[in-house]
Length: 447
Image (cartoon, rainbow, N blue to C red; front, side, top):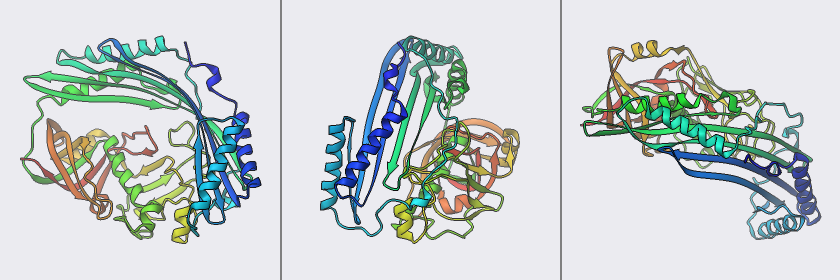
């Protein structure tokens, strides 16, 4: 059967819960309050070697309440949305606030920053698929991967997942807003084996609209092709060379950048880009622009997790950092204004001259193409970067032998300034839209 319609409440139902919580908080003496209600449902299946391994229906509801009494703050949550449970949750938050220390920086964002006219961002496309149909799609995905080559000997499974969410947020400024959204994924993981060597790889597709997912057979074939291409991988002698990061790996590099310019990292003085606003942090050919209102994008949102209206923002222009990613609290700590980034970035687009794959490889010449990263070797305070990697050695612009059990190392400040090319192969499967990224020189540690 498909997901029961009762799992998807009307937005007005959740708004009434928020209004009840805020009214209770006001009557109990809160000087300010915020309440957020979420309802989600989903179906996910995983098939391994043609057999169903997992089948899960998910249905959740939750309420979170934050109370301010002066500069004292208390928060409580519940999964029960009955009137009595809402009242108890507000009481708990009030009680917690009575025990917390005052913090002059705590409180709601300014009222004039609240989102008022919410744009339709085309984020909700429910997939009316039942468990048998999802299982059949997962089987087709895995079977396509296993059929690519006789060297594909095993599978860790293929998965289909679909989720539907409705979130409503309100606060004592009079703001109340919500919107539905969906997310759907197809993924496959297979293992190749030849001459005593075994390699694992994967592929996945993700979209708001299930009709925009890659064909399930193509997902399986791409996973298998990636695994086969890695067979026979060896090590490299230690050296310095240019490094080309595949799009999903490059997205991680930009993620380290957004972490370093977050308000929390700045006011805690724990960032390798401390006080970097106004400074050159990328080459002049690169800009980073936040576009939260792209229709149907995975990172789109009309307001942030505090209700502040999201807006287009040029975060980095011609390589120069224009500001930080701030919520209300970190903005006050820094003496600045919130940027509508409570909860993170919304469609951060890395812009610059983009080269196709052949041109990128020619620009790389002789160097390393990284397709997988391992480990957490990043120091957020100094920017020192050292992570395990796997990929391919490129000679004279031609992808050659696969390599693994190596480490790429550098300092993120130097790495960002050392970007010499971007790829046209932009990966939009997340809140950061980025293509391949080439860094002029890094240390590659191997034998």
